[in-house]
Structures are given as structure tokens and as C-alpha cells.
Image 1 (cartoon, helix red, strand yellow):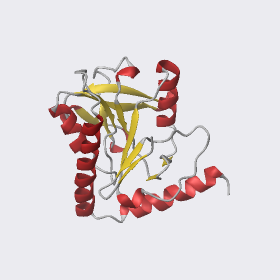
Image 2 (cartoon, rainbow, N blue to C red):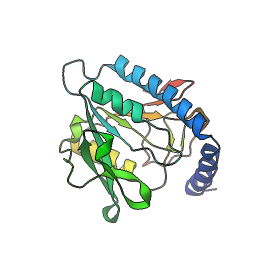
Image 3 (cartoon, rainbow, N blue to C red):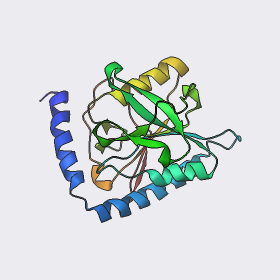
Image 4 (cartoon, rainbow, N blue to C red):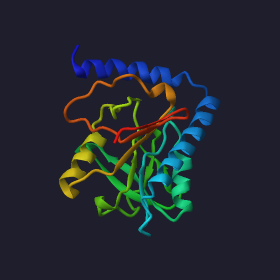
Length: 203
């Protein structure tokens, strides 16, 4: 089986597995995982020099883990949050700053996203942390995305434009942490995976 075929099969399996969680289980596990993620970010002290902490966060959709508590934590400490708007014709994401969740609007397929009028993040090097969405993760930083390649392209753009990648944090349900994720050479790896039960620091 090719890597791509393995990924396609695993995506179906993991989507079905995640969907088995009840709404109550998703809410409880999301809250505990986000609390652990916040502790990790506070321990890292990325804003210790007084610089504004900038968080790039996905906006949760359907059965995804709800990272809203991490976003609220960032706002409460005076940080900046940017969220993506997908530009499908160019296979890219534009990042827009929002001040509250009320500034999001329903886009294609009902996914909440910023309005094009929201301020665009100009400097990729300002991003301290990316909350990375995905279907499955492993303890070596492996990540199974949704197949669009948007986040892989974003990380390549960061490397090309700034010479580095931001800290890449996956906040996931524990059932999403598997033994090994099939990876291609162009797939990026996360720096940490946090669930409601464990924290895996990769680098």
C-alpha cells in the first residue's frame, strides 16, 4: 500500500472514530486538553521578553477538538490571535487578526472564518505558536491532516520567508494519538501533542 493510500484509509478510520465521541465527551476532553496546552504554553514563556504573544489558531468545526479556551487565554493576557481564511483557487491560507469569536462568519461548508476585511498578518515571523488541526498524531511529531496540504504549504512558506517554523502544537483527543502516522517527505512534524491524558514533547 502506498503512503497516499494508507493516509486515505486512515483518514476515514480516524474520522469515524472521532465521531463516536458524544458531545459531552468532546466538551469534557476538549476542556482538559486545552488546560494542559495552556500550562505548556505558560511554561514555555514565549512572551517573557514583553513581546506580544501571537497565536495562529484554527477555528473548530464539527467533531474537531474545541480550542476556544486556548484562544480566550491568549486574548485575556493581551495576546494576538490570527485565524485562517482558505483561498482554494491558490491552495493557500490568508491569516487575519480577530479580536473576538463574534468577528467570524460562516464560510463554505459552514466553516467559520474571518471576513476578508479583517486585518491581515503581514509578518510570519511574529507567529509564536500554531494550533495545528488534524485527524491523527503520533509521539514522533507525525500528523495526519485532511488532505488539502494547506498547513504543509504554510510551513514551507514560513521556512522560506523567515528561516524557521513557529512552535507547532497539536491539541487532540487521546484517541487521536496513534503509534505511527504515515508521512511523506514534504509533511511537517509537530513539536508537541497534548491530550487530556498526556503530553508528548517532540523537540
